[in-house]
Length: 146
Picture 1 (cartoon, rainbow, N blue to C red):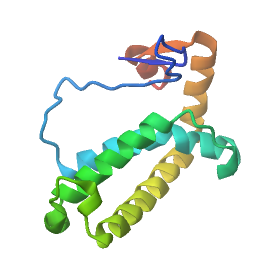
Picture 2: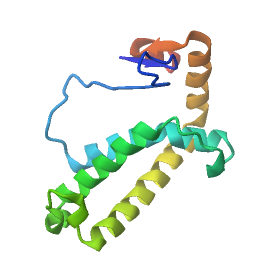
Picture 3: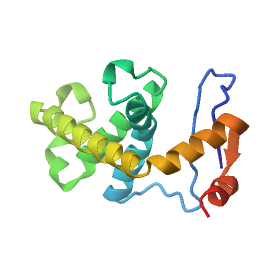
Picture 4: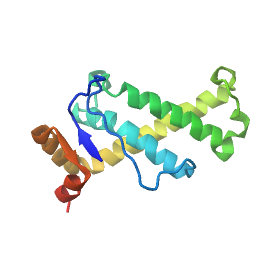
């Protein structure tokens, strides 16, 4: 596992992917929420770094946001509250689904910003290390915070 700020040949900058040795296709709802927060974390860190001014946030995390929205839709469709949302086509979902999606999005965004704010000193250490080395391994991250 590696975190990098080096662009790839696909022009993806700062791309991070996490593979778990215990990765499974069936996830608990809390695990889905956690993964959504991970996808939102880059944008949340940028938001805090730029003084909480949304107009300054870049488009660098657009792919992560698309993935987060898809996971939120999956979460709503599979949660116990989502029984009425079991439609194959998102265009035929009831208006309340979109309201619930907005509510979930806001809730997870605020949770992610709070986590980043609480761990700002650790994020700064990680950012400094990435700026210096361009990429670091999971083992190096663990050593940074040991």
